[in-house]
Length: 122
Image (cartoon, rainbow, N blue to C red; front, side):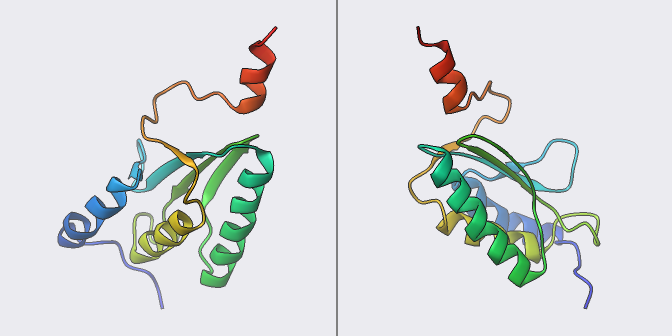
């Protein structure tokens, strides 16, 4: 069964809850994005491993990047060309995998990973 785009009513009723946890509209896309900052690389990698298993089980895969302790995730349903219930469900699952991580709410901020910060110290 093909995923269908969220209606305007669904967006108004369901997106505010996700926005309260740090998910934001992805610039230039019908997608949502969240950036987590973990204490270290092993924590970031463990989050990504759990996320990968959940995504595979749901047959729905995020666009993401990792830079040491930073994990940047964008969710959209490629086959529907936009945001669907699949994205919201996966976003909710991912939030449960990272309860102790810092959430970067300003996606335009200069986000430096731990290794970059350590490199600046004399």
